Length: 284
Image (cartoon, rainbow, N blue to C red; front, top):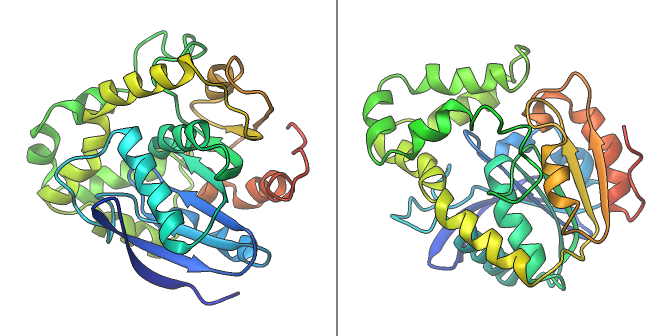
């Protein structure tokens, strides 16, 4: 396995902590909550055999700048565009999961010349049509809890490990994640300021939803796109993408939790690698 270098890279007024390894066409891996770049621990090595893998801690996460604002999808997308510019990379395949999906979607929609292939997993795209069944009983409980400014961090300080563990257990259907990865996630979400940054994307959801609605009103997603579902989002994301995407492949992974790269890395690689190499992934 190639050596992974951890490099600070400045972009869009923040410094991102970025893991880089391998050589070849760039694959940009984007995490969600409550993760860092180490969410991709199990797939970085195989991908690096044929790609330059770039996996940042997003704004406010892990070793990146704990910025006071800028957690809406449009600003996060600008962070990513600046990261590619700083690396001197004209294009990348972008793979996103959970909270990073709206930013990745906007990047591809607004800059199709910069995104060769797009993989989106286990998230929703704001209020775009298609997710009505998933949202029939409302959004998951933590969306509201995280959205209230100052509340969640005040309640959770001192209990960060138990809170992170709940998401890791639920996200792997009880199977858990490797201890070094768990420890990295807990460390990255310990303390009031770390928690605030983790919750800011939820507080920015109204702005993100507005950005998404405006973006699709005048544009279509032309980048070849793979939507991967598991539990609990399943096909809801693919249904949101279908009306706006010109080239969409869908795949649902059975017996797989929300944390796809950690819960079912081999199954993910089986559909991800052919798609990144330009071959349509077989639906599952």
